[in-house]
Image (cartoon, rainbow, N blue to C red; front, side, top):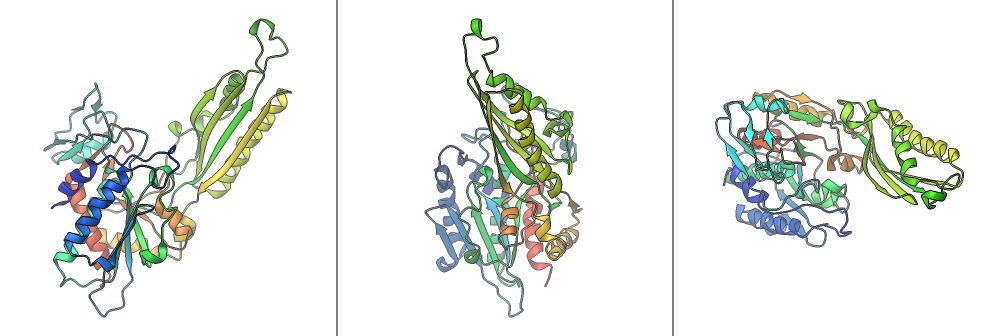
Length: 407
């Protein structure tokens, strides 16, 4: 089975994670995919003693043992099984665009995948694309990574004469809701270092990501009949609007890029009596990150003083940190290995910061250095998601090259 066939099989299973379920994993579909992957590993020929399925929390650990007396590092590869709850992952109907000509691609529900909006499409003229049908996400984040890792495993098991050290593989649940490493067993995984295969287009390497925090703001107002409201009513929703207006326009995700941080209003709810705002705060720079956390609390405190009788609670909670602090400079050999592997395959390396987080960031802070490399997809988390077939095949080759380039 080739990489594309694997990918299509995996995306047919709804593995949408849920922030509301309170379970680990957060959705039953992740178990369905995990069981398929375990069976595929066994059919490949991985011995049962080298395969472990955490049936309680839905983690898979597999190992292809070293076949050489040379002392080589144990290299790990990690991908996540869940898809984002930001768009439906149910009944994914992928469509193929062969020999892409650079024009608009019509999807369902009036959606159009256009290079005018998504100029990266023009990188793939003449190639084969897999897109959504316009009603769901595709699932390349991160089922493309899973398919590429499985293809790599296939290759080494079918070619036992190729020398390599231990190859450690892990598939995790609930990465999209920030819980991908919650029950990750680093000792069982067994790698000296690893790569999350969870990035974007072919050639991407990332060893920087956002420092991340959440800010949950609750505003307690005072509801009085509007006909008798003068000097009595405290409208919690209007105060919520004032808090959001205090954040500069140039510090929001829609106006920032590269290493620029932001405040992102994820949701707002409430009425006159009570209102709630949920933000995420992001910045690559640790000092600026800490300043953002202080600033959102100061905004709330200052506005609270303007409205006696109003209570504003701002709870700020750290989520994850920039893996750069754990990779540079002591573990740059891991990044350089990936660069050498790309160059061997005539792939142009593109080092870029992740404007988000990865399981690798969390694992790096737990003692397993883990930069992120390309999985090949674009426009994750929405109906415009797509991936290039040739990129998936090349990334599967890249994983093989990473393992063998130091021998």
